[in-house]
Each structure stands twice: as structure tokens, then as C-alpha cells.
Image (tube, rainbow, N blue to C red; front, side, top):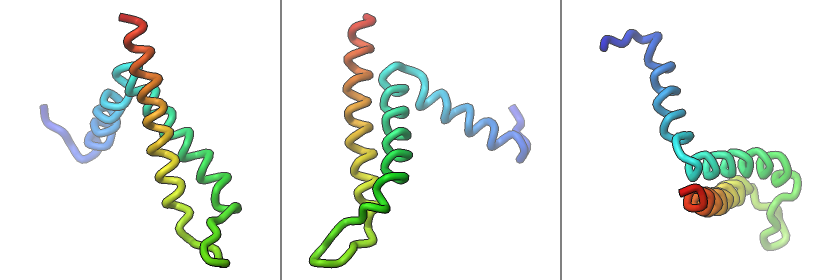
Length: 86
């Protein structure tokens, strides 16, 4: 198969789609991570993180941690759903 430069992004998206959307576990994990990233990016920056009387500009750390924890929850739900189908 010969790929031109125009075909590489389409092929990359196809491979990524198959990777993250192939099983119920992966679908749940991916959707929970994306949902957490959107929600936390929208709602967390106005809150800020108070550190020693000042605002800490590292709210992105909390967004990352929230996305990871949400992904773990989605993964657990996906595993339970996958086992219930078998």
C-alpha cells in the first residue's frame, strides 16, 4: 500500500479511532476522559487554586488529575459492562 502525504492524516485518524473505540471498555474510558477534560477546562479555571494566600496558575494540573481519575472510573464501568455482556 502506497500512502501519499494527503492520506497520512486520514490513516492516522482511522487507526486512532480503532484503537480508542474498539471495545466497550475503551469507549467508556475515552468518553469519560473527554467529558472530564471538557467539564474541568470550562469550570475549573474561574475557581483557581488557593496556595498560601495567592492564586496558583497550575489549574491545568487539576484538570489532568481529574481527567485521569475520570478515565479510571470510565474504565471500571467499561470492564463491568463488558463482563456483563459475556
